Image (cartoon, rainbow, N blue to C red):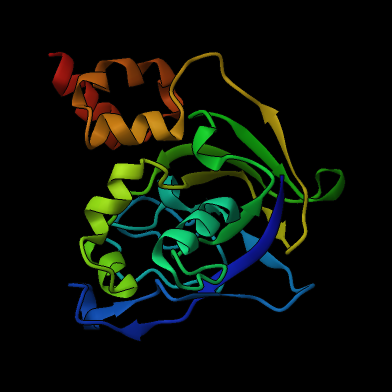
Length: 223
């Protein structure tokens, strides 16, 4: 796996968000080739924004913070959506910070750790959650029934927390340095929290690496 592009969003107005000033950063564009972007833990949910320097999070109530510091999406998934939608989807079009290639991001396990950069020079990231599509995303894509279509595929991309800060560049290799022994992949977690709630008790196997909100939902289900 490697990073195909590093994508940052500048604030722009949208009628599809309730964020302050109706601002969103979903329109993410690749940085210039060779440019490095600092990645660090942004702070707690609700106050911390993006983990990437220069990136915009418009709605801090629902996006950003340590559990959503970095959003990764596979170019291979974008290619499949291009074919289905019949339109070009550039890197960053789904609001992802890292467009990756050579790896099925949605098959990553919760708690899996990625070291980015040649010879381990970049940040250490940990897979902790997945993306739930929102109306801002739907408004941005302008595709009929988009939320239902996106949810039906259950290939949402991964949110990662920052364990160790560092700098990322387009072309950086990504090495999986730790892979847990449970069954809870990003896709499995997505299905449990959306279309298959009967799976919820099983996501607790991911332990402390699981996003606290997902853990709370699973514990309520098992109570």
